[in-house]
Figure 1 (cartoon, rainbow, N blue to C red):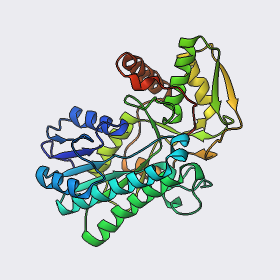
Figure 2: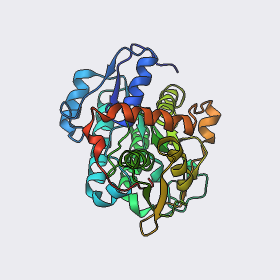
Figure 3: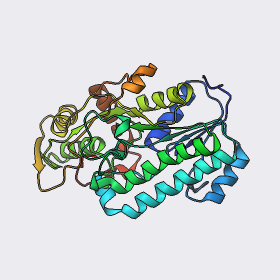
Length: 325
């Protein structure tokens, strides 16, 4: 059912990659009552603060896209932070949405919830069917808890809380700090740095053989609004393109756009992560949604955004290794 454009819509995590894209989408669609709160204004890990904020602002709809995120390196070195922050954020916002009688909430998870050796493409039924990928299990466990939290609130309280699981994301607003970034923005940064330094070699962790799927964040934002208006099921639903490619091919594509003269060097002593991860998006496709951004065009526009930010954003200037997410 279409959402009235004057509804009060809270985007939890509006400054992040996904939250900023959802905010852009809502504005483009004519929503005129978008609610946001910065970390300084509201600690989403603090239940009393979140309850008070919901009582004061009375949102009708909630996009729960806030969280602590990162690639293999960040997950492996900050496991307590990844599981604690995300568990707390999920719990406080979902409970506050229940107490405030919100009309609907969409919780955004991650494709890392699925088993390392899941059949490909990965269907929603693969959840909890096997061991997780060890390099991101802390984040995955927190995200699985978020799915089950929404299901539990639906069963016990009748809340219209739904969950969506996106594949690997990229786009404007991404994190290019290579100690915590995912593979695609990390590759963009590394090839750009090699271009600037006139260094012919770009070193990438792993063998280059893992297969990954990538979705432009503006496509995800479009899917989130679509699901908020057209989906009301208990089961989580995958969001992606249904197409994947090896990390090596991804690196070659980024190279062709950013620094065609660069030479790829794969550090095979470093971990690859999950061998393959591509989502079965047949359920979402059956509802009538599909992405519109090609990977080539998406990388080009993301690199253009990155260049625009370089002069004003010092956080883009860290240097580290690119990791498959």
